[in-house]
Length: 259
Image 1: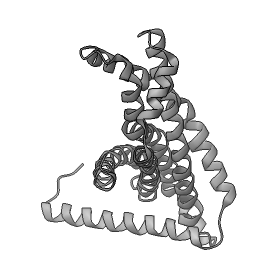
Image 2 (image 1 turned 30 degrees about the vertical axis):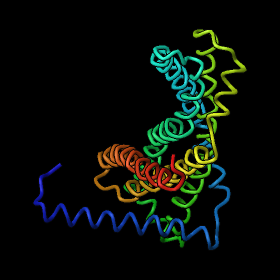
Image 3 (image 1 turned 30 degrees about the horizontal axis):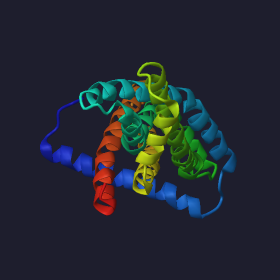
Image 4 (image 1 turned 45 degrees about the horizontal axis):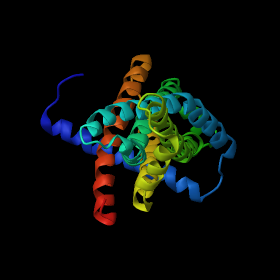
């Protein structure tokens, strides 16, 4: 990447933010007008949702299992090993479930969107769509945005459930805890505010994943090398955005609900 002056860098940064905002705004605005490409939305739901299911389930399950092992070691010092279910449930629902799901979906789908749209851009397929009277943003970006937000919500729920199950497997078979006590403590640990916080995050994460991936794909330059560059940038930027937005949402939810 060539070095540029701070002034040029600042101008490029502002221009990128502007282009991204306009693209995301157009994609959202297309939801409220016709035509709507329902077939493309369902196709993307299948690719993004069911395609990401194995990695999300495995990540959630083993994260919960590791969390139970690690927490039991610390809780044992205070004679509170039976509180393992509380810690696993709170950690998975409020933080680890949404964030890990967002990062997994980002690595799998944000890169895929960037490479797919980038290939269409460098082969001038997007220009051909415009020449035929089809809006590429409405046809390509809006379905991906809708499908990612919708499926990220349910993938997070599955990740939370399998994370608590993974913690239960370790707690019951390794730590010797009672299954009924574990699940009862997990249920009792969660309140309305925790569930709301855990389910709001994937909506924002899904929007970030799709919009960033499509933005870098739609702005690909430089042939096949540009496609690879856009793919890498999409994953890195979306992952960083997810972590930053997670902090902002967490702080806001704590300010609203007090926990």
